[in-house]
Image (cartoon, rainbow, N blue to C red; front, side, top):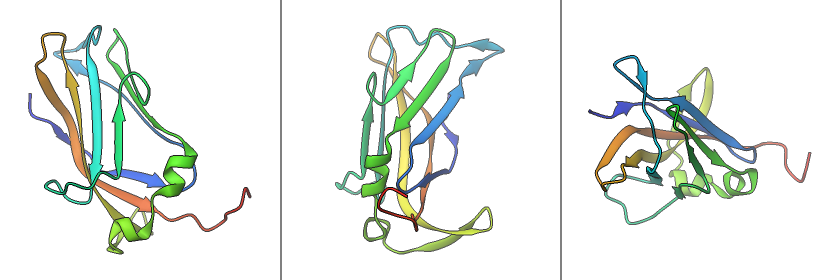
Amino acid sequence: MPSTPYPLLIEQGVPFVLSMRVIDDNIPRDFTGFTAAMQVRPSADSPTLLLDLKSPLSIKLSAEGHVEVEVDHLTTAKLTACAAGNEVRKLNLKDVLLLGYYDLKLTDPAGVPDRVLEGPVFLSMEVTRNGH
């Protein structure tokens, strides 16, 4: 099945959660025994990793088709405008920076990968800092 294009918006300095349910032919996919990985890079061919997330720590999978990607606030705080290359775009009526691109791969117990999501990652820069 081809991956679904889906842009992500990460807010710097706060937790990021992406939660979804994968359904094929009206039946939730059973992810028992699957592994998952998601990487964010400035461009698809870049050797630079901005985020490297894997199951079971950062990506949770369930037998009921649920996929949840979590990035803690300390990690999102480290994402910077320098990494984003300062390319400003409008998204939901606010200025955000293009951080890079991602894909989310799920690999079945036989080792066959499936890219379920892919797209650009935007960063909304934090203004209030120092624990406030």
